[in-house]
Image 1: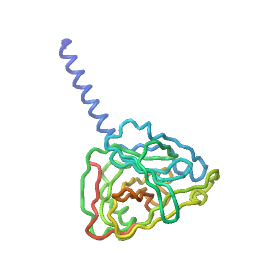
Image 2: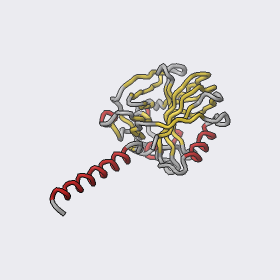
Image 3: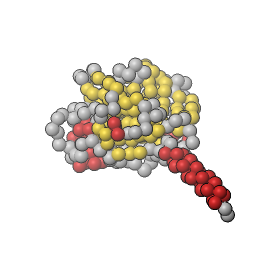
Image 4: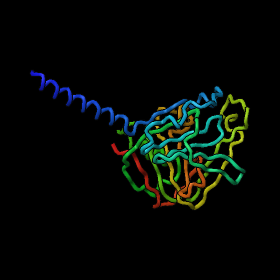
Length: 238
């Protein structure tokens, strides 16, 4: 084999390698920190500084603010932070100047869209549907939902300054719940059957944050009742 042929072969192999790396990077969920270390060990400090995420193109992510003082949602490269103002009011601002004790994120350039069946209205029904339709797909993964909710309950963690945490109950001291009725919403979610205690609670495969289109309300999604025929599900395109 002459030098020219060797160089051509190396160029082709290098191109294939880079293509494989790019394919693996696209849609791959990265997780910093662990929920259980926050809830049971009181490790409330930031494990990731969001400003350090270099590639923000088509970036999606979610998690709490360090020391459990708010919620974070990244949607298509824009980062939102929500904090409690009162029992009925919150503040939502756009900023990357944040740290999180645990956080999941992925760059997702393309999505596949499907209309959710009318029978899927609750978080539990959504979880079963996602488990079924993605059983042969890479996991964990992130997804999106858009549509109208009949009712939703979201929360913002609001731990008092200086608090010590050794249990989930202690971690949720000061938490404020907010109810949303008959509104258009956007939801970014994480699904995995292998991350309970790491990025989902022990009794679910889901971790979801909800935001309204006017960007005035955002938080961790706890309860959901979808309006039939309005909800679209977006899964990462392979």
